[in-house]
Image 1: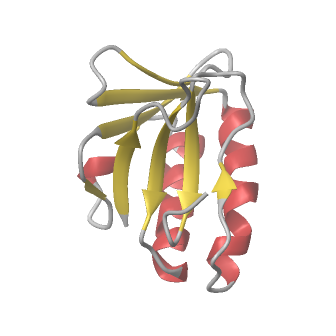
Image 2: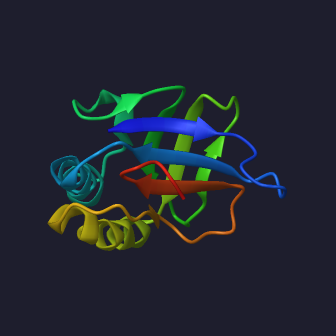
Image 3: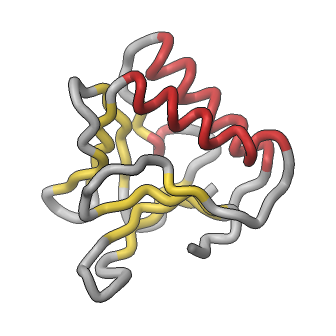
Length: 126
């Protein structure tokens, strides 16, 4: 599974952090990592420290927040995804189709008015 950042993906200046190039097994590992680390243990999760995610041009840390803010950065290298526990529970539900079978589809992992979206896409496309 690869993690990268894409700057200015459209004419509105939106940005994209994406997880791509993965199969059903890796999607399941990602879902379990969120469940165990964030929801159960209430700890942050640095995705590039997992054994199945390789950061290409950025780092992303998932953190628990009092409100759903989405992904932010100060330097376009180190990113933070700040969501409530409910936001992460919703994310796990969005991951379920990728964990149950191989698919070519894609899914944005939150619906927040933010300049940086979080894309989950086996083929990397959107």
